[in-house]
Length: 214
Image (cartoon, rainbow, N blue to C red):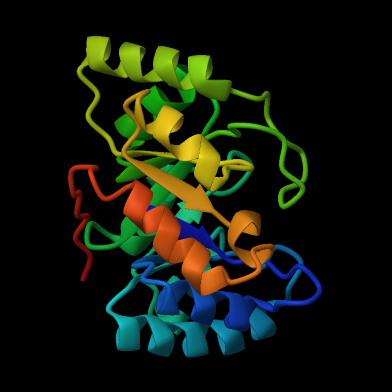
C-alpha cells in the first residue's frame, strides 16, 4: 500500500499533485492542506473526491473532522495535536476510516484502544514537508515498534512516513510495516507519475489490506 499525502511545493499544487499520483496508480490519497482556510479545503476537497472516484481511490482528509461529510471523504487522519481518535469516532461513526499519527509503541497502543483503523508511523528521517517533527525513528525504530505490537497482540496496519524515497523502501518493508506514505519524493521527481508507479512496484509484494468505509 502506497499512500500519497498532498503537498504544495510551489511548482506543483495540491490538486495537480494528487492528479499525478492517481495517474501513477495510487489508490490512497490524504488531502492535507495545513495552512488553508475551510473554504479552500472544501473547494479542493470536492474536486479531489471526484478524482478519487474516477480512479477508484480512497480519500482521507487530514485533521478536519468537521469537513469529512462536507467533501464526502472516506475518513480522516489525526495528528498528535489534532482531535483524539475516540472523539472523532463518536462524531463520524463506525463506517468512516480513522488513522492516527504515532511516533512510539505507546502512541500506537493508545490509538488502538481508542478505535483507530490504521497508524501513520514516523518520521523515518527528517522531512521538510512537516513542521514540528517528532524524533526520527529509522529502521531500528520501526523494528522495535512492530516487535512490541506483535508481543501485545495489536493488529493494526502501520504505514511508514517521513522523507522516504524509493531506495529506502526494501529495507523499510523488512521491518514489518504494512505500507509507505510519500509526498515530496513524488512531487520532486522528474516524472511524478512514473515515480509513483515505481514505488507501487516496490511494494507489490505486501499483503493487501483493505479498510472498509461507507
